[in-house]
Every structure is written in structure tokens, then in C-alpha cells.
Image (cartoon, rainbow, N blue to C red):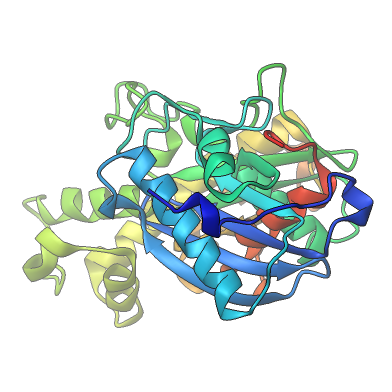
Length: 337
């Protein structure tokens, strides 16, 4: 447990009078990034935790608090405006993570409350893709856009929807679950308990599953990935595809096709000006976007052709989620004071 005596104390409660330094936290199914961020969006320092290394959610909260205090101590900072958290299945209304399929801790996790007890400052918690959308809108390629969809491609697939310049949260805080739209009835099992969800095909996890499916085919061509089938990751598959490996290339083509289906559906519902991709899988831009755009030409409704821009986040070090989480301190009400 974190020593409460060393925590952040005596912060002003008037938002305008609080200091201009915040901590942003971007929780992923594999890694969690914690950064010290200025109000202008500069990340002064950051640390990374392996999300899966923590046996319980409370142990994870302890790890987050320790890391926050380390960041502050390293910079000799004693006050914060607050902490912003982007989390899978994060609920901004309640400050909770609820039934996140890509986290090992199940059920409803009151993370904002737990963090507040440990660091004693306002905690702002939101869905990770909503946070990424906010970061892209304030600091990235979506500046000036009022209607766009942010799609995060990591362990799973998240999305944040912005319409008329505002995040769409839905009546209970869970709007924008594009990753859990069913694109293949009876298809791959999803962590949410259903089958055929988009994220089981379009995510790092989905890409790995596609490679394994292809390796198991009787017609499969020789692949350098065969010897790594038990330790596959996105970087290995991308490197193989760039080297001309036929299985890796086909896996990216199939992933791009499924992504196009999801984006076409998102366009039909929200009519965005742009869709911005971010996350680990989006870093394989050349491999992913070409098949996605080719398939999108076939499945996008005529109403949107020639009007929809698809791009990859250009924020440094894929900082959209972290910066957006930090920005929530200034743009949204805190989950816990």
C-alpha cells in the first residue's frame, strides 16, 4: 500500500487556481503509460507499467500511485491539478472500469476512488478511446474537426465518437463500442462473452489469431512465423510482412478488410469528416491502410465516398491516449474530488 503521508496534499479546489501540471494515465490491456503533462500538452516525463503483472486491481492502483509519486519526486513537483485516466470500459460518470474484456481483473473496479485515496487529488476517469479522441482533438491531427471517430487498435479495439465538437458518451457512459459490433456471426469468441466481435479480428490479438489460423491451413505457404507461433506479437508479424512473408502479408490484408467493414458501419452511423487510427497496430500504417482503403472503396456507402478521410495519429510516441487523459482534468468534471 502507498504511504499516504507521502501523497499529494492541499491542492486548491478551484479549477482555475490549480497548478498547471497534471498526470495522464493510459491503461492498455498489455501496458499502461503514465506521464507528467503540462496544460499545453507537453509530456515532460513518462513511465510504463506492465498491466498484466499486477494480480489484483488494487495492487495495480498501488502501482499507479507509486509511479505518480516517483514522477513528481523526480521533478521535485509537490502539487498537481489532478490525474486523468483513460481505461478500457472506463465510465466517466462513475469513475469505474466495468467488465473490461481485455483486463485480467473482472467486474466493476472503482479505480478513481482507489486512486484518490492514494494520491489525494481530483481524479478524472474516462474510456480510453474517448481520452484518445480528446487528445487528438486538442493536440493532434483532429484539431479543428467537429465530427470524427477515433479508433484505437491495441490489445483490443476501442473507439471514441465526436459529433459537433463533443464526445458522445450515451445515456450510461458506454457509447462508441465499435470493437464490440458483430461482424462475423458465430465467429471468434470475444472476451465480452459473445462471438464475432470486430476486435477479435482487428486488434493485435485478432491479427495474431489470423496468423495462427492461416498457419494451420493445409495450403499454407512456408512462413518464418511458424517457429514463433507460441510467442507471436504485432511487431514480429509486421516485420515478417515487411520482409515479404506471405502469411504475414495475407494476415494484414484480411485484417484491413475487416477494419474496412467496421469503419464503413461507423461512417453510416455518425457521418464523420475523418476517422483517425491510433495504437500499436496502427503503427503498421503501410501494411494496414492499403488493404483497408481498398476494401473501404467497395463497402463504403455512396453517400460518403470521396468525403471521408482515414489517417493515423501523428502524435509523438502514440501519445493520444495519455495526452487526452491528461486534458480531461481541464475539460471534464472529476469522477472523485
